Amino acid sequence: MRGHYEELAGEYDEHWVYDPGYVPWMSGRIVETLRLGETDRIADIGSGTGLFAREVAQQLKPRHPILCVDPSEAMLCQLGAPPPADLTPIVASAEDVAEGRARLPYEQLDAMWLKESVHHVADPAHTLRGLADRLAPGGRLLVVMLPATIQYPLFEAALARFEELQPDPAVIEGHLRAAGLKAGLSYVEHELRIDRDKYLGMVRARYMSLLSTFSDSEIEKGIEEMRVAHPEPVLVFPDRFAFVLGRRGGEFE
Image (cartoon, rainbow, N blue to C red; front, side, top):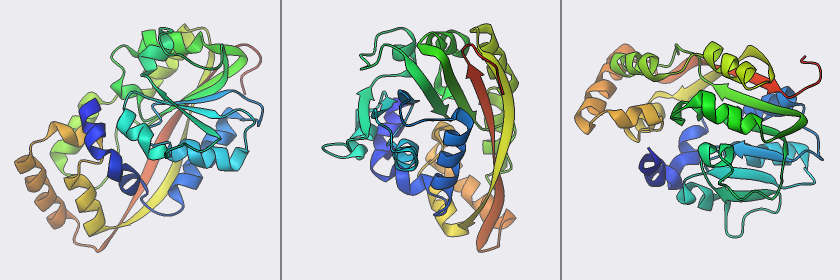
């Protein structure tokens, strides 16, 4: 899967910016849910190109650089050379951080988030426990993930495979509780509007890691299925996310 992101790195941001309001909206929800403060020590685990960390930093003006942690050096290179002063790239996986193999500038973290990356973790229960152990007292850990079923205008085989592979947010909430955190599960939704041909191009480029499990011929067949099912020039569909939040100590709100 790392190879998938290495190949996509240069055009990743283009595929994730559905519309101009999407990244600020999602980043705002992350700031709000984690109750981020400018003095917090923060990590974006599985940050990719830093698309959301960059926006969070702009909204927050943090005193400590946000750690952008990702196993793909090619993705992190998109931060720039040198990277912005408020972002620090760390080439490491979630497992590396959980097991203490990653060299971080902070002994403990006040807040971290994993956005649509928990499904790449081989043993979520073990890794989330390790990440929870890196939290300072009062620290927060947020897992942002798609629900078990999505309403994307994808071809049927892709939607079916998504349901086979996607973890249940309620199970992730249970892992956070088992890690000793006070945990809760909520949902947020954003309406997406995107040019149909642009979206078909994103599918062809396999913008979702799920799509990398299909061959070129299967992708093309799926795109033809989508053309028939969605003749409208602009696709409108809900992007719904589960926010699984855990907190170490204190009252959970």
